[in-house]
Image (cartoon, rainbow, N blue to C red):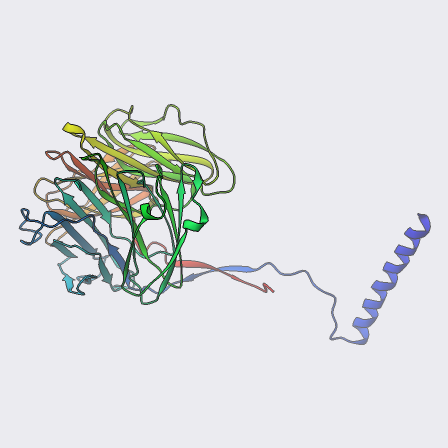
Length: 488
């Protein structure tokens, strides 16, 4: 052993000497140096057009009463679409255009301090495009509400207009007997989008053979009935990933219990997988089917804790303080024992999860209104769509997380003018409701700490409800991190 040690030492000395000699003889040869750490810098992106897609719900033919503000055309299914581009400080009157995907007809948004559009009777998705102004991306926000007042498709569906994405999760609905879940994929870009769809259920990931890959042409819409490829899913979640372009996905859902309608509506994408999720606008009305849907997209179990946030603060949800969700599984937590009221729902987990809330309104005869409320990205800069009409009331619900927030808000009115600016204190882990003037079409929120927000819609006489989640101001994230270095 001693001889080997001596030989190893002598060999090392010879090798070091050889390298040194080689360096002195040939100055172009150098011993290897440790790789330098890559330099990280922030690059500011130039402002670009903002594009959003406004989706509609289930339609049936017939006649119904219209609303003067939205126009005199109407059908038994009535969809109200509202969009606003809010002027920034020092900026002139903003502009934007709305284009129907069905007939390519274009409408201009107009107004003095906000460009506003309110239209009725939309039957196909619409695409809104707003150019930059004042060196910033447009403050664009919009939403749709689809009303079916009776029949098998009775329900109030609502969706906030969404920007295109390459990765999204949709939580809600089912493919069991009597249930329908239609996946809608809209490509508002100028590039062909290749979309792969994967389904998840209470039993975990659905057989990979049911995963579908499809190509969607620029400006086109693809519709897929999920129950035709994967039936008998009681708790449904859908993952959509895109290459070569970007899309806006949604699920248009409905359900029947025999001949009794269980509600129709639209499920929009929420925040991606994260260890912390916050759902705003969970209006619980004592419905027997109220629930929180959780998905674990990871490869290991996730331990989850749930808290309800109300006007008086927050409290743990009994029975949901230490849940374990298996990899790939979809789990529902019942909320039917929670007192009626407006809530936010906070979810914390040991691993990244996804969350969505189902709120229901039960009516006489067993009929039900069902709304799926996705979790949303918290932010200090939010835009909230608001839609009101005859019999349709709206209120904006705010929720603060672990930090209290001072919120400054200003409404956008139907004529494109701005209402009075006001402030509201939102204590930590507390829900608050804004007082808004009549005819509000949008609200701009600026907060001292990240908050979540949503518009709660209600047709009390008809026993129908829906929710329009807020979106983050598109101009908030204008920089990207770039790593400079040798990555060979």
